[in-house]
Image 1 (cartoon, one colour):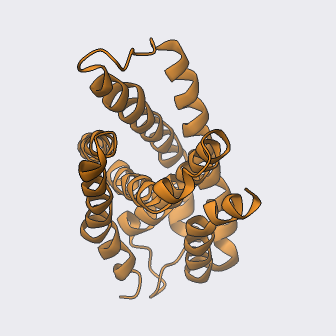
Image 2: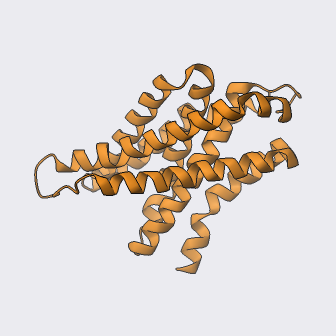
Length: 214
């Protein structure tokens, strides 16, 4: 169990180390704020989910309600609202303090990287909770959950900076919802869900990371 909990932090630690290398000491308060984003989104989601009726999964279509409404919609809504609040308050301040690569901030890139860290915080905490509750769930969740939440966080971070993020929110919701539905189906489709998470990473998040080197 202890080893599982340590491994649950691995994606977050690796990515945090990458951002520390990019941003240096100036990035420390930004990472703390992103940690608050991820933790706050998880706590807010849990509270909202408690207010919604718990579905009877033996009833047809109830799985869609659970995966799309109580999970994906609530989680992405909380992520979006907190990101919108933080970006509105900090956009101009952080733009003057953080430099990427050449010394000139690429704002959409910065907020994408920052949002992805918040997404990984969410994924890490959620994975730990599942691991404590369901033994053996770590290996099922660790990679795909980190990729999905990290990518959705990056999309919303970029989108909120550029155009208040409404389109990015809908896009992240669609990605998250489709992933949830796939992994909730029998084994073959669950495997497709994992492949989908990897493809999402390569299409939407990996290009963002490559931009840092330019």
